[in-house]
Length: 493
Image (tube, rainbow, N blue to C red; front, side):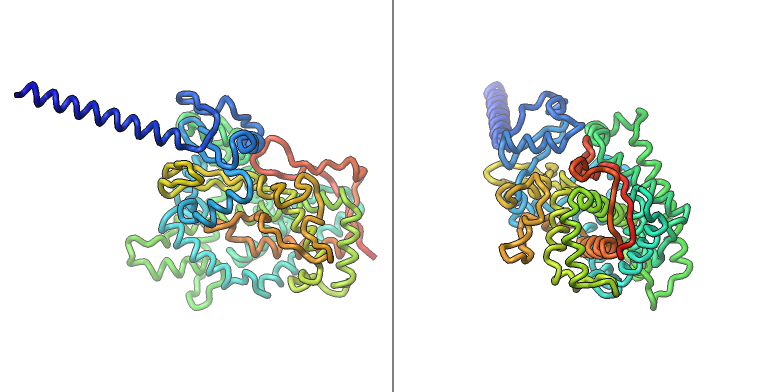
């Protein structure tokens, strides 16, 4: 009797084991297609980390719009093309709305802030940030006037260099950063301010490292690499210095806070912290404030600054395009006033060129990685909860289904037969869905106002023949930036 009972238990255990193995194999076979992973290593020997963007695009070519790659032990889904990205982020937005856990961000920000958090923390931080940005001028005349004033300051810096060849990258970043500072700190910095210049230099260096091949390799085994020398330590040191700068600003705000008259984002957050001081579970704490400011300062400075830097290089390459923009500026705006946001609707060619610059420059080709919030079935494939998802924005902005000549710079992509601006749904440089860029409205305003004011005031020249100018991005980076160049500006008569 006892032996019979033991035999039954063994049989049940064996059957359970077989069912478990069958279920696991069935789920494994239902995963999206991709290269066969090696034990422990995954597909890291099959990926060119020096050009991970190209490697992920090739996955789409070989395995289809939904493919899977194993980065060590971590599974990652790669989405190639507009249709599949839209289906994931719009039609299945709840499932694909988490932010992927990235080792550098986890170590630096510890899950705080609007950019790399999830769940209720993310929802509260995003809702508060969007509301506050609107209150402080996002999409309003007050912020437009700040950008116009900063454009004049930038033009003055250009006049100081009139006739000389110089790299405009840093000046453009300073101008854009000052707009971000006005929203968060209620102040702007002079272009010679040493502390400000040092901070921007640190931000640029951090951005370079976190988009480099080394950052991708660090993600594979962060606990191991933390004990070894490498540029990741430089990044964390930079974050510490930026953290110190931001905390100094927050402390100054605390000392001078007037709850009846908030000056900027920091004041609004501090007031909210005081309102919820008795709530033990509140998300409005100093950690979220600090990381929010850091996240948005980094993102707001680099993306628009990089786009403007790329814009001038492209316009050096295509003087005929530059001339048409200036003709439209002269016709619609003239020389007696600054460009305004309202002018944009009457400047379809300029608007089309800016759209095409953003499409062609493609400065965030991998997109910011998402993650699945639950197990899901997508396009017939099983995708487990917590799987990293790369929305390949480069394949969206260069999707042959939506752009006739996707690899070439051509403003006609965004012009109809009558010369009017043409809307193309695959134009999503700011991503889409619940995790789209918080600062999209500000970025669009900055790029239009800065660029049109520069072209209103100056003629652009360089020593290199336009046909020899290379507008392909700096190679071996997870973020596309313009190759280094110099430019000279002369006042238009």
